Amino acid sequence: MIKEYFRPKTIPEAVELLQKNKMATAIGGGTSLNKNEEDIVVVDLQDLNLSYIEKAEKSIIIGSVTTLEQIKGYFHANENIKRILNIEGSKNQRTQSSFGGFLNLARGRSSLLTCLLTLNCSIFFAEEEKGMSLSEFLDKRKSSTKLITHIAINEPDDLVFESVSRSPFDLPIVCCAVTRFNNELRAAIGGFGETPQIVPDKYFNEEKQSDITAYLQFITDEWASANYRANITQILLKRLIDLSNKGNQ
Image (cartoon, rainbow, N blue to C red; front, side):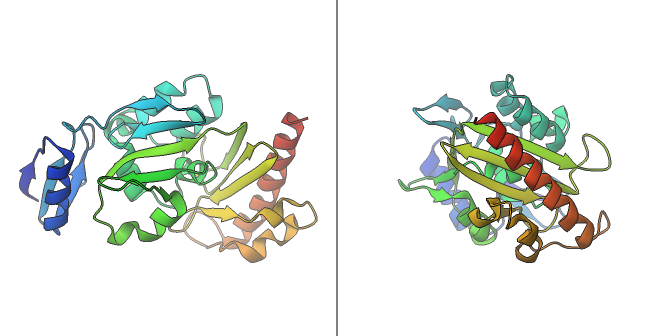
């Protein structure tokens, strides 16, 4: 139940509201609230000019109130990113989801979050100059009351993604993203758990790929067994690494 509603006109005002109200929930101009039996205080960010996408020298800066549908429109020529966002939700869901809200709520089955973990993202907060890595943010987000202002995404030389699910646009049972920056690969595995998992560099070696199941924490749930996920992950990881290497030749 919405107990109070605020629509701050400045970022300092929004920060103050979020910090002094334990029940405060920040929303963007296109963000909807799920049913909540507890009382909440809504802080609407749509007047703070945080909906934008800007190209920097080697990165893309995305304001926290930018919707996932706007992001899809920006990357309209990138088939992999379009497919990742289509898996993330319907057009209506993407229009209702702000990027900042998504980062606070996305879990391990998120195809987009899996992809972002390979892109050297930095999260920036109001009244702080230094950014935070996405992986560090995910570890701290449950207890954080900071206001996300924007996200910086480094552009890779190559990005490949594959997902295994019950239907083409269903959330993945297992998914894998591999990106290349110069000659360095980054990979993440999603489809289960609280958050996707980053693959350590040593498992990019073909001789070590069979050991990945001993490192990643696979789980059994209503969608698949841990053993099935482990076997599929080995196949996806090898396939995408080979594909990325082939494209770099």
